[in-house]
Length: 132
Image (cartoon, rainbow, N blue to C red; front, side, top):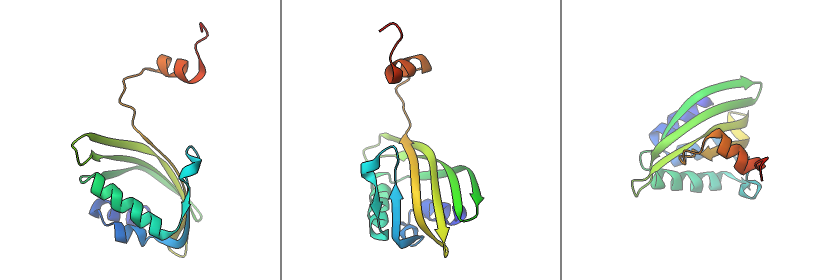
């Protein structure tokens, strides 16, 4: 599935991409629970917007592994928004394939933080400074 997924991403073919998913596909983003959805039609709508909003969208499979019907894929997604600003996301998706189609997926994709915040500042922001 990784090779098929990557090929349609490179082709910017939202229809072919949606064709990799089962009609009753279920999507979850555990870090963003309100973003869950179901159905191939929503996949088509989402990826049509991605390819329109990031015309030079490029995907790199950093790593992948398969265990039975479950595949883990680490992605690096890059490009530029239609206004020319940089687009960058990275993370992991975990998908389950049955009958040659993606049945469900958990996405752990996040925008790349370009703020320049170092680890100390990040730890302080996330967990609070011991001096606070």
